Image 1 (tube, one colour):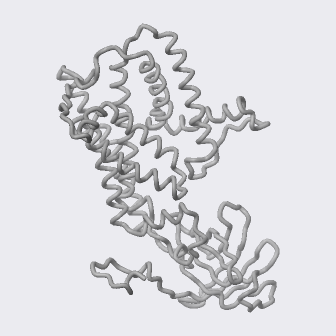
Image 2 (tube, rainbow, N blue to C red; image 1 turned 90 degrees about the vertical axis):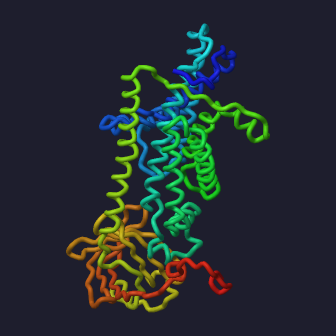
Image 3 (cartoon, one colour; image 1 turned 45 degrees about the horizontal axis):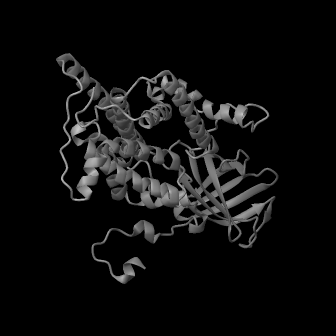
Length: 426
């Protein structure tokens, strides 16, 4: 299995050593086994075990060994960094042992070809995962009502970036189109080079956004760029000659297999991969898109001014009172009966919270990432825009009258304009 543009002569000593390390690291980090249907979800339970072993027994950070990683939504946690360190250490160990046991091997052309095939399909799967999600505008949602009412300074850089990207559905769609197109192109060797160059530009932009806007996928996006660069390396002479305006030879491509049954098997496996990685991903994203469209808003969804606020039966009317709730904003979540938003107390105290409302209009409010209860009680609809809340905090009883706020936001209402005067963008 080789292509005519690959070298057939013996490799140098350090080239062989470098390949052993690269092969071991890529095999460990891609962890192809976790993508096996039904089996992968079970194997993923052990995904972070190398990082835990390093922390528990080599660095000895914990008195009691730790073997579980709570879900965080971040790919840049300490566990993720330690996993990379663990993989590098394992790859170095494999390289040493491999080099000692395999001294006579002069090159790894066939193994390198297999590695490249695996990396191409892994990269394509990742591009389909992210790209198709953007095609359905699922990855970065349009800013919610709660976010429109949130002061700009309250956003983290990551959340600010997510809103910026989610605000424009066409922009997000175009980014997803490029990622998906690049994933399709690299599945075929005749279009591999343009596909890799396309993905290098796309993923380079993604990596810079992650780096400079605090999006916690820095490690993974950098790893995908490493794969792209490794796959591009075999073309480095042709690319350099092209950029320097020098003559360059075309890249000849020979088939991997010569027998008919091998060719048919190759086509069948590629079709199966496309069905699994592209078709299944598209179907799941479409289902998610439909679920968002059919989502019924919470009865209490909206922005509300607190007209009356009683704590333990005592009316608190001063808007500067830091214990008085002055505004409550609620946006629905995909899980029925749940929402997210914030409560503003006094003039500037701002608390992000989650809401849970059952069919009998029992309401529970909790802070983000905190199991404590901020409010638990009953909601009563007085008219279309007026609500009465009665309930308790941990220590006090509360009674609130809320009136819907009908504020309009320029950012939400301003449409695309070809001709723009100064008044249209200031």
